[in-house]
Length: 129
Image (tube, rainbow, N blue to C red; front, side):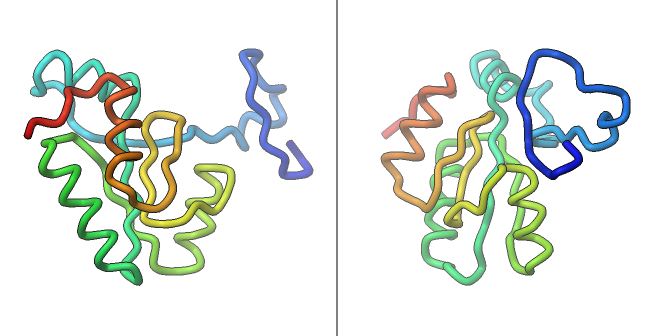
């Protein structure tokens, strides 16, 4: 709204605020060629990985998990103040990075078990040993 407050609703916004409406994510991962189960999960809960160069070990481990599971994801690097402002605008708050958005859910920081739980809950194929 005009005061900068974010509202979630199933009712369309008034005409004067339509220019301010933002989508939670603009994930552009190509899903057409994915296996059915993966494609369905990617359509309903796209993955966006927010990388943090200042936390290289955690960021590298998080990226490795996503690649190991062969998950389709979009990566955004949070380096500057403007990057953080964009992240806050997308997610409604400043999460601990690295972070992962799974559809509308955000998993802050990197902990392998919590990321796997969120990914599995979204319907992505289970991790293979």
